[in-house]
Amino acid sequence: MTSNQHRPRNRSSLRSNITVRYGSMSSEQPDSDASSMQTTVISQKRSYIAVAVLCYINLLNYMDRYTIAGVLLSIQNYFGIPDSTSGLLQTVFICSFMFLAPVFGYLGDRYDRKLIMIVGLIVWIVTTLGSSFVKQTHFWVLVLTRALVGTGEASYSTIAPTIIGDLFTGTKRTLMISFFYIFIPVNPALGGLGLLLLVFLIPNPPRGASDNQGGATMESTSYIEDIKYLLKNRSFVWSSLGVTAMAFVTGALAFWTPTFLFRAQVTQGLRPPCNEEPCDPLDSYIFGAITVVTGIVGVFLGTCISKQLRDRVPNADPLICAVGMLSSSPCFFIAIVLAATSIPATYTFIAIGETLLSLNWAILADILLYVVVPTRRATAEALQIMVCHLLGDAGSPYLIGAISDALLKYNPESPSWDFRRLEYSFLLCPFIGVLGGLFFLMTSLYIKEDRKAAELLASGPKSNNITVQSTCLEI
Image 1: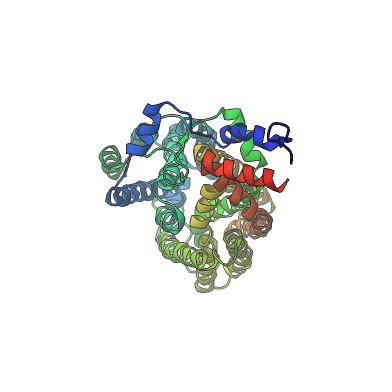
Image 2: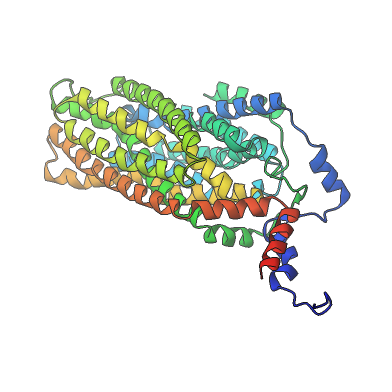
């Protein structure tokens, strides 16, 4: 027999402590930190109240985000702006939201998340109120306030999902995330109420509280290490690209569909052109109602399918997202083509397409939470937000408007050409949707491996040491 003194030691066993640090975990924290993790127990009742408050504020965020689309025709007439400039209103909002998201992601992984959300919500309320009083000769002020509104939303949208992730785990987390994201498809006074609810009813749970089964406390790493970790996480990278394609499609549809349908009806002789504001908002109401209903149905349907398949099919979540994207694209293509001849048929295919697209929202948030370790989730949310808006809905409303304006020169005096040039611009969306479906198929190839790796890192040093020891024995 060989004595323990001369037995070769496997390299991985010598580096087990480094593995713990890479996973942002530590069992050798000061006693005060450990006791803080153990004594911070949040009741189920308070957790449910917290989710309800976060959902309410999320509803206000998305109501405000697409308010411009609902009154776009009136804004165009009031300020006298073309399609490309109209799209710029959404682009400046998304750009500020996008570039500030990494900042709030960095802060959210290191400082008091509740306080950050409170400050962001105050900024959102003030700028939203200010944008309501812009005069006709000061269009640039409206552009500026729309940009500042993105500041408040970036602080909230980046951090809120990570708090839900630290309050719940497993299928219950999936359900709570679905409630939160159901308000994507569906105000200052209401914002003030949301601020009060956020101050008094939202807890600030320890990061990783619901995931930590090894008795360890969480330890933050440097921002550079966080970014390197995320870029090596293939499921995160491919799903972020899929979300980007999805954001491109939803951003363009949400902003331009009411105007597109109004012009289609003018072409068919069902309505007169709108030459002075206020314009008839009926198409905005109908499209908004369809979006709310299909969003609710799609989110719950996607969540139910995920719960049924996840235990039997490890990569079910990205496959559901792929099916949703790939099947919604033909529906949107048909809706765009039929708009010139049948408005009811167009609404029907829009409803089917939006339902299929909405399968993804809650699932995508859950994917990020279970393939990324807890101390890097806010950074991951922020990085995903930045990428999906940079290449997605930050540019899609402006791009659609710019293509439409570029086509104007071919027949500048024809109302029917106003519809056709926007129709041709819109046809870009279904093809981007197909690309997004392919990105989710790529995610399905790596999801099982990346989820297991995140679970091992989040389970604490005890679980990691057991894994390392078993590896040594095998060697």
